Image 1 (spheres, rainbow, N blue to C red):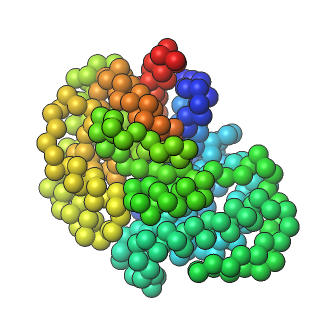
Image 2: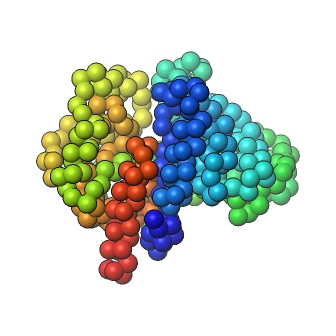
Length: 345
């Protein structure tokens, strides 16, 4: 398979996703995480998203398993301010860099499930959580970028003459990602120089607007691709059958989340789409995935990916892979999309 840098000119980054750890078995989870990490590295991915919420394993311990199982794969570690001080985040990044010489990415999380936040007595309103997240991330960035002591005073955080040791080499400075599905998230991403991740609409619906100039953007999406269209749809429908229990779980999750992306995808899901269109929300509607899927032949999926590239998306976070072969099929579609763009340049 091609490496990530072969996929496209212009720093295209492809990440996979760890499975939800709450569903894992205690004695097999570590081995399964290591296997998925190796599949992702072998397929040429840049990194792998590691979740965080009250029901998940600690993302830093999971990230250490990933780093030890691979040679270059970069964990994209979800970071929620209510769980740890910004100094602790910077210390973890610097420590893993010192021990393993591996770069990390940080997925800065402003919110989560309402019940999780309430249990932690975090009653901060939605947009204010992004104000807090900006302060939190600025402290982390300052600690990792500044050789001397850092002082910072904001609405939510204050530090005085705080110095980080060990220092992090400049080439290991983490890339920063955060949700860009709301205006508050987009504004926060711009202020931080972060990549804003969206749960996308079909690419054609962006044609008029285009991308915000100078704003790094990415999407979270699943892919089921095969050489032939019919084969891809057969695999997709067998893996994600409609399920009334899952639909009820999805409805409950809607009530427990104030995330803009969840509401936007649910509204899109109410619109009927023909099976020939690659954009597919059945896994999301049946609580089997938290992102849209693209389904079809390599060429059809590559066409849709190419449209997203034309809009300006350069980071793609894929759903957790069903297996190494499934991931190779997905990367084959990306390879074709990159080839189309280079041919058109």
